Image (cartoon, rainbow, N blue to C red; front, side):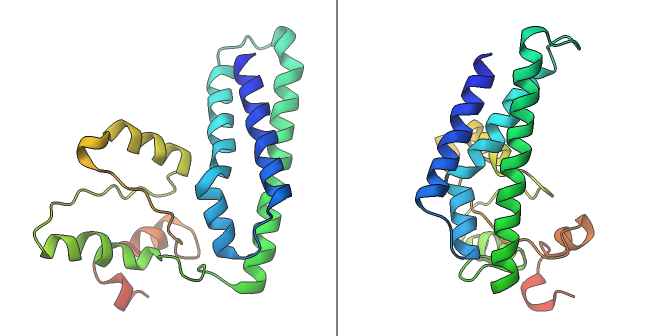
Amino acid sequence: AECLVRFARCLEEAKARLKLSRPATVSDWVAAYAGSLYQVDAAQLDLEQVACQIPPDGGILHAPLLDAREAYRSFADAMTRAFQEVVSREAWPASGRIRATQIFDREVRMPWQVGKRVAMFWVDALRLDLARRLMDMLGARHAPTLDAVCGQLPSITLVGMAALVPGAEVDFR
């Protein structure tokens, strides 16, 4: 029940933020999701992890759980449609945002060449909320950073992972 309440609050806060300030560009959508909208996905994941422990009949939590799932699907669908409309108008990748093909040179090669130690996680389709949890687990000792990056299209593993290899920024095909 506590997870259901947390999820409902998180969803309502996200809806309120979108109502106050609707992202107008692809870059705005990326910033909005990376800034706070990802929290809806995190709350939904927490809810589903707890829901696995509820008996199949669900008891008194069955109907509220079904309602929460429907609310999440509806919110995710509305966000996806709005984002796709903006991408259709502007194109992809988002203007001013780092692209997947730029990651190796910017985040690994350049720091390494000036003597910095670099550790990087390259994970195909890692959800932002899970990446944030991983970053939190690494702690301040390692000074982790997390950046939203525009993936290479089409977003399939073969293409996405190829975009991350050394030299992809210059010779990706």
